[in-house]
Length: 274
Image: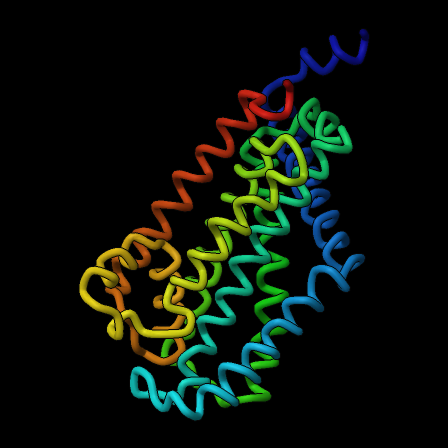
């Protein structure tokens, strides 16, 4: 009681540095825990995407790509390489947050985080940073594998970095929303299986949408992953099926809307205090 009275009587000039320190320590704790989780189960988080990417390059790049020929002015394996890297970033950013946050819900230790003095916006930021970390690590591994099969040039390093970060943020936030509403483990695998995977494969990873009839191109433009993949591909090759400025508008808009939604849901206790 004395400590509570003493704390409440502290002046704002003393409280604010204490609160800032608490927020920094809390945020760092979440991020470090997420990083340690990724490294601890590296056989589940890093190895499978590496194997999958290798198979894609062997089958689609080397075996089939030679028969397809050039696409967008580049060899087929060069054309699909940025898409495969982005696909690994998207799926792993999403998968890390949805599994980690739902695991915290399932294990009931999310309640300890919610009763802490950390604000909701910072908790969301910590989990998103964990998703970004896994996405970047896996993306780096897949990029290294890419260089084994083909050489990659960079048209704009700024576009490459910003596109991968924005895409990772968007799907890390989407994974958190999935985890908030999920009631069981089946529900955290439903969206990746029946929504994320089809959108990824139909998002221009393996082809240019210019090969499609007009009606199919129109439908493809409703797929947000198409814009992310093409923005990232533009950063490497300088070619894109969509307007890069529009792609950034969509990515930034989606990130803002999803972040605000996540903070609101967490603040309201949706899915965590029921």
